[in-house]
Length: 447
Image (cartoon, rainbow, N blue to C red; front, side):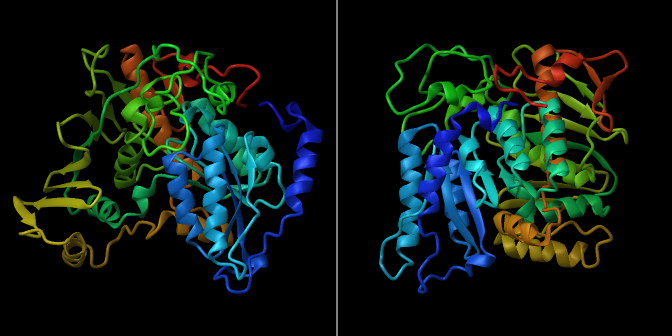
């Protein structure tokens, strides 16, 4: 990939000298941990998700945010103000200066005083920034989906393992109790033998055909595109300034993978977890007959014979495990369980009480007990301290991203594909090796 040397070394050294002179230590009235115990963070990407993650991490006393990065001037200045405003409230002086601002992520990851990096950019940047951060010795929290191709996922894993980094993928449903309980019900045989699973999310991405709009000052559009194909600016892809929407770049193949890799990266991830298939995946992908226009219908099969189906039901966005003896349907804040035709617990009630009932009746001493995390951000910070893998390690996130990207390939090409998840390659004369990567525009390269 392009390296730190491709931008001005002198410019970086000047900036580094300036920011190193800023006092990063908060006054005694702060609730922060001692400086030697803090985890210093840098944030890359300050849209809605990035700001949300920043707010979450600022609430942890062992964290200090030292730097923010975005290609939009308004967003990065807003990020700086949010950080300094937060710390100002905790100082005896009532003011605080000390959050560095960058347009180029390479400058941020090059700072030796930053321990870990949080990445919340559009998907087409995930691999490059993750690899750069790992090579710079940073621990990493990267939003899902991990990346856009099988080749990118391999390159990220290689960099992370080589540098022994702690990497958390932002598949935070693993840190929500309802999803863990649903998966434990499936894994412990409460539903009987699993026949199939429906993952109900939206459809695949489409090629970008947006018209050209004038680029306003303050946005580095060339840097926003980065490794993606060069094209004129359109505000649908990157709305200017600080906004409260999730931009629709994810709808286009060049930057994302549609709902299949967006919410699908959450729900397909839970399906894999509930089958005990982390690090693996299906061995067959079959597109629907109307693949050119279909929004659902790809069918997958695991070596065990269990089917995973990309379904679409109006008004639904969930995962349903169908077993011989029962069914569990789960989404955020909701779980519905039917065993032998009996709805459990009858009458519903608050989610916490439902989950208490299910665990008490069906999982008092489960043979399979999944990793338990009550907070995705805390779990990563704890893993940084222990140097153990967090709940959604890079290899887990890679297998989920690979599954989602293969689902999209079935829609894009309309061909049945046989897949070896262990070797990560097409078999049986199906597929095309070229499909396992996406184009990267010079000078950006992955692996």
